[in-house]
Length: 298
Image (tube, rainbow, N blue to C red; front, side, top):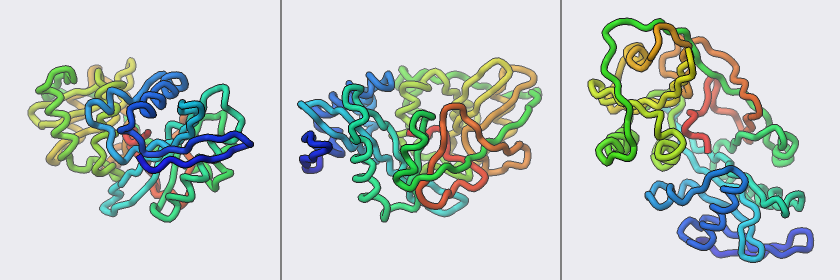
């Protein structure tokens, strides 16, 4: 953990700490706050060894407890062959009794000052209750785009089975593919398997499928006649048509991608509109007519 610093905010003294994942006392306090605010914590992610230095909480402590937090996610993206360094802001939360005291503002100022000269872009996804907060730090609303298509199932499907992340052999398949996958998107997250595993070992553990013939894993959510294809992991090139056809479970389905396809000619590009979520950037928006992969959201 970096050296702690005492800060006085509105006549109250707090301890400012950051990057403290290996400090059990503070990590568990962060977990308690996250559980209260968001309904999940980071302990299993940490214990499994997936919490890397790319995820860094910046927190204020009062009476021994983390009472406010803003986390920094340093993420590299390969965008059409060029490497881009970004910082995503996430896990913004304050204990209810400490809200409206300027704590998040203090943390945001500290983060912006530390990172604004080290990355091309800072960005975040905000809920509707804080849309007036982030412009105070020079964040502006920006656009992302989503790719969809109507797909008619064909014969000759490849065999597809569900992955069981509780089985060591299945988990090993996913770990290998995440670590060695070829970019499958025009905007691909690079060198951050820990963030992928944050989702795949918890929230999306029931949504992973494996096509053995292609040695390919897919993260898919089915909802009636809709298929949300969140991510693909494969060590070699593959035919997207063949993959989608093998994953579909109904004759006709609307397919929505959680990433920006390398070849988009068969897809419809639409402005992404997510109820309750607004995309903010500080710097030049580098996504163009695309979006950051859904599994890169933190």
